Image 1 (cartoon, rainbow, N blue to C red):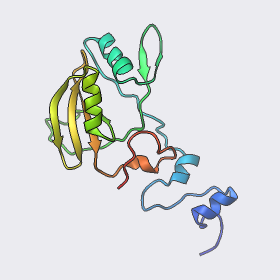
Image 2: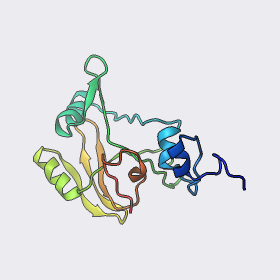
Image 3: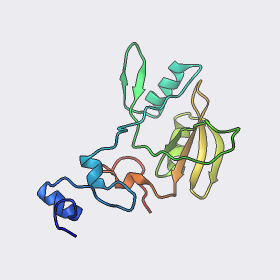
Length: 168
């Protein structure tokens, strides 16, 4: 094999500023993520609510998510780093999507949320892949909240200090 920038180890190339594509057994390397970002740069999730003002107040005042006013009280909230999982399902359930918030300590988080008046609509259950509960969004149905126990791709991101970053 010929030596050169295309065959050099990533550390060699990075130290010398040489563009390269790292082979990481099918996974995007952290170096490549920093210097050759994926096409998708973020996620814009939408919560539909019969009482949008109450739901916005919940995310703003109770969960204290950072936000901007896009126009006339239309708040858009910043979210911590996210994961996307694809689960198999039956044809009758296909096309359904769910949103789960993640935390590092479900017991502490649910105690804090209860103290803020949040209604938990299901008891905590151990699903193997994590501890799970659901909470009510005013005027907006329910949303999942869980403490993951599965490996997470978030630990490989450049700023892994934010959000849930379990990688074991």
